[in-house]
Image (cartoon, rainbow, N blue to C red; front, side, top):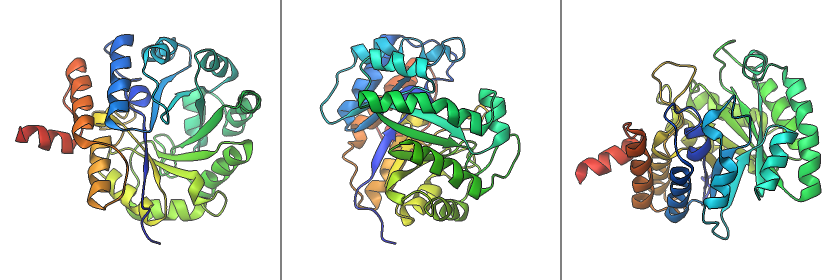
Length: 300
């Protein structure tokens, strides 16, 4: 299969990247990050999450962030809304696209959201109904597709079954997440071969964590499988909470470098992206998690 001519990056830094940070981040700083990412040419930015601040304190103020950002035509500004209450809050904030998430691992589902996979999918039914009623698009996430911190290996047929459920419910796209970053290129190809038997490749995306340093190899393997949408996080924001000291999301800058090198169009300006990542890292007083950014910045 030939490589895609263009790829869409789904920037998850403002949500997935910031949600585990211990240091409080102001609404103004979150707004600046989203605006910086818009200016860099990202066409899809996950801005926040409408969940209980009790569980995810860093995502408090998502409605204010949506109100404060510059909404550029043609750019999707999305939010996580895992239940009807969250969806209604997102709707009130003017969000035009939401995401829901399920796990491919029964153990992870129980530990993470205290219910079975089946129960978690049932909770999405009212969200999907309300989204249809209001003309809101819904994207689905499946976590732990290549391994689980609690049960180890995950059956690829189980991944395919969960992805197919989300697809059948009305998710226009399903992102397959290697949550703990243990997958390899061969496993990634088998993953997409298996899931594509139930959900067309053009409705699938990849979400790779770099815990074992395999994220870019897995993205290249996905490109070979015809996948043309990838989730990434500016400056590699978002550590992996299941592996102490491990990196989490693959850095958007590093994915862009790969795509640029392959001649694949993304519409994103590298220098502006690096500047956006460096600004938020300075604010958080943490090193930049992108190897490309570190190399370019060291050059001066």
